[in-house]
Length: 259
Image 1 (spheres, rainbow, N blue to C red):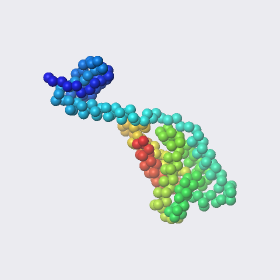
Image 2: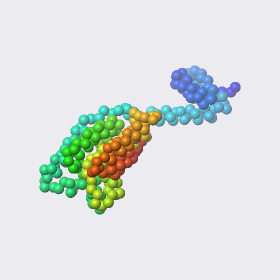
Image 3: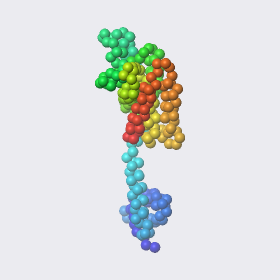
Image 4: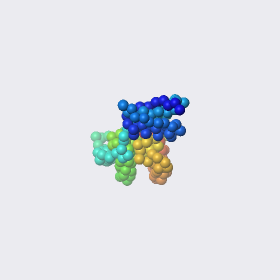
């Protein structure tokens, strides 16, 4: 039986590991100590396939080493939620006090017709305006919880920026499908964008803590359940704003989960 060397390994342990790779694909191998390591031998006729399998193993190992070592959960910083609460409270108090003689609702609400005519800033400013205290408190409570969950996966800075962008994109998409007279305010579009981020990120990211098995669908299922239970309740609820926020966040999550 003619043997040929296919790999020089630095140690017996390394040689045994490579031999196991070949055994798994049905190729018998032998090892022999050399002055500069341990040589792995196979039958001459098996050499091409052995070399191919070992190269594939090397490539897989290199990919594993290059993969970012993100912790399962990042520790969110308190600055994010505190800044979120502070900004929301300011933009709630300012219209109440008619600060700087500005009609905040008229200038900042997401009116579909005006957005489509070029007032794109309204897709952002509308997120900070609320009808009354209960409207504000509901979005503050959900926003803090969702923000902390997203921050555990993306880190605080990226998480809160991504939530804001998902809300802006959600308002823009909502304006595109509504009548020109449609007007909306409130952070709920961004909140549901955050829920979409959780769902989308988990579907594609191997660093997400629930990425294996049926559990990977838990955020998506929970997001859809929240969208149905909380996103469609109440007379003044803008259902399509919640849906577009969720969709925008979900698409962003799919993108961010691949990096």
